[in-house]
Image (cartoon, rainbow, N blue to C red; front, side, top):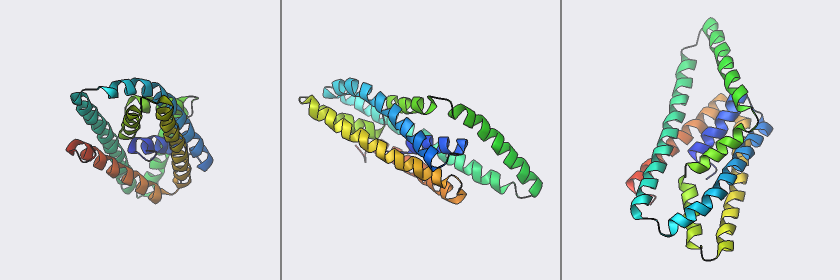
Length: 209
């Protein structure tokens, strides 16, 4: 769940636009995980109650909504990657390259100022919990199956959230380390986008249901 396309896109945006180091990437990832965890704790109570007797039609709409969310994120990731590659290819001369680099620094400066604001990473993580992803839905469904024993249900959620912190921590550190390695960063970005589109299509076609 930690390497879901939307999570990779969020952590990748923070690390790239702020020029984060490995340590800073880890900090951004843990803040996103913290915000996501708070939101999931709130959503857990609501979703468990719904999943116990939720109509099949609602589950269908939730699946389509999740697939649409993942596909949008995948398209955005791949579009940003393609734009980055094409823009770099079109800036071969020294003069244009300087202009390109200056423009990129300006854009990253604007993004960086916004993303470095206190609470930005927390808010992003909280918003992720509102858009229920396949991983969220899976753990909520598993909790609903043990709703008769709440301590077991929330124990499962606790294990899930601890794993999320650990996984996102690795992702943040890795992306921070790869931040200055253009080819490696583009590879992970492309892999994330393709994986997201694949998961979305699998949800729509019923492979993951």
